[in-house]
Amino acid sequence: MSDTIQKYRDYVMTGFVKSVAPIVIETASGAVITDVNGREYLDCFAGISVVNAGHCNPQVIAAARAQMEKLIHGSSYLYHVQPVADLAEKIAHIAPRGLTKTFFGNGGAEAIEGALKLARLYTGKHEFVALQTSFHGRSFGALSVTGNMGRKKRGGPYGTGVAFAPAPYVYRSQWPNDPEECGRQCARAIEDIIRFATSGDVAAFIAEPILGEGGIIVPPLNYFKEVKKVLDQHGILFIADEVQSGFARTGKMFAIEHYGVTPDILVTAKGIADGFPLSAFTTRPEIAAAYKPGDHLSTFGGNPVCCAAALANIAFMESEQLAARATQTGDYAMAKLRDLQRQYPLIGEVRGLGLMIGVELVRDEKLTPAALEAEAIRDSLLRQGVLVGVGGAYGNVVRFQPPLVITRMQIDQAIAAFGKALAEVTQSVAALPIS
Ligand code: PLP
Image (cartoon, rainbow, N blue to C red; front, side):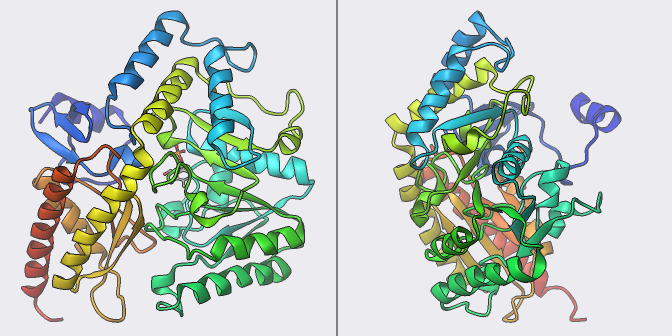
């Protein structure tokens, strides 16, 4: 056994996903990861949807290295640092209209916490409405607004003053063939939730424009417009959690752009700096003004090296038109996955936007979740040298979220391996005795 695996066993708190055989990564480039034994893996998960501009992107590295030679840490909230100012200006230009003021943190959960707190201070109200099956991070506040029981198991009870509305999960809704009706009804349910499940003191509604950990749930196109009408009637802010869907992943710089709605607070992390730890929440100046001096700070937040990396990352996305590329490659991949769906009844639904793609596996027409099969497919893909994620409210969704620089040839390789995994798993399920 490798020295690294043994040291992980002895000294690292491995409170994460079990794996048949942990990979010890040594290097990575583009969409390919290489382990310590020189074996290559095609990465279709991008470090959980992070390295959108590719692993070890040369432009991002050059910018980070140049900044590192000058200043690594100065505490960006005690003093001023140029990359922070430049990045905040850049985000003001690419974020939905009117969102011009940014606070930088280090990870997604930290940014969610800051956004929730800001919403309370600005509105003077205290409750939140969130979605069932959502995921917003593993800190206490973020877990309190997380509706995905599988992701928040153990550690409760969580914070009070949070009511959960049904997610617009068309495939498992009462309206599987009528997305618009599903969108309308789920938005209408928020009205009832506010009336019957809160004390009317709601500061914000928080939602992922596409629910990632919940199983790549893509809300119907009318959903957020309908929701926004309800929120506006009640003076409730809309916090869009784009930690996973942001930075070109879905074919737009931010997924909420697909819905023609402007959030009040936009939360980002993961893809913002191509792997450097950075997060942000961005809002209108009048909301930002609710934070008075001393109200909010982060020692490492707005690290100059991460901010320089983020600027180069965004420049790369723009010059290489990564958002458009995500749409083209994503449509290509989904068409191929739908071909497989016609062959394998195990595939219940293929859904996604851009390169945020989920394949939901079911055992039968009652849509019984095929969670064990999803894990078996992930393991088979791993043996074949392809890395994917598995998630979803029922653990039965295979997630394809590769670096956006992935080529069509690499997609072909991944889908061929997926086809082989489906054949293997279908055969082994057929061989099981009928119980
Ligand atoms: N929000 C969403 C939508 C996420 O997917 C995640 C992480 O997966 C988070 C928040 C938390 O981010 P982090 O793990 O960086 O704290």
